[in-house]
Length: 282
Figure 1: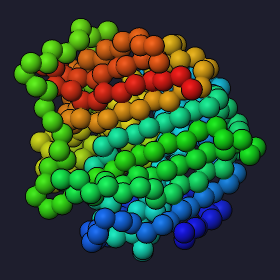
Figure 2: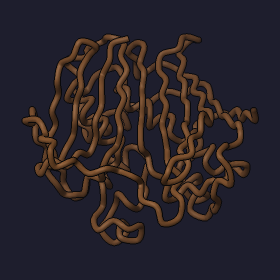
Figure 3: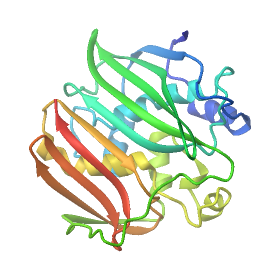
């Protein structure tokens, strides 16, 4: 394992500059064993406030579980641009994300964050690989996640399957109208300024006819809708990203209470699934 220890969270601007020019493609079914960690990280209150506003969370003294993803995201980018990593960052597809939060995390807490390249899987459309992230406060594990990303083979789509004709989406509990600048607003608070999320002309450069919403915005908005149900309980929230959410658009959110927690969906007004997920109590 090649492990880097940083003195502070790296600059996303610098990392994106490196990502824009990096080329590469996995030659086999494995990736190098790499990790990176940083201690003494504290959330920026103004960023937290802006993030909560964009994603629909109430303003409070604890951090949304999905905010901890964007706090640790620069470490994923650090690994992606690493010289030993044979993957081109541009064009990667985020396909799944699992978060476990063991207790609420306060805005003022000092955090230790560690990110590691995890398991890899050869699939029909390319190579899937995981980023495993852990966060501790005062030596206590408080949060962890597994983000699964797809490096596509040339000519292969992401593999999302459309809703079968015999499937009927549930009645929505809520309907949300997403504005055309949502990708730019979320990009400003998260640091994720991938061109596919920003403007029609930048999205078209990567094959999208309109900008698309960030997958982690969609997950965060669903989590905000479930916040009163979750409260301060330890929980996990798993999602699978199905199809892009084009901007602007209206989307439907539905939830169903189950024995283990809550199942939920995000889908278009025409019934096309964008995201499916589950909240489970730990």
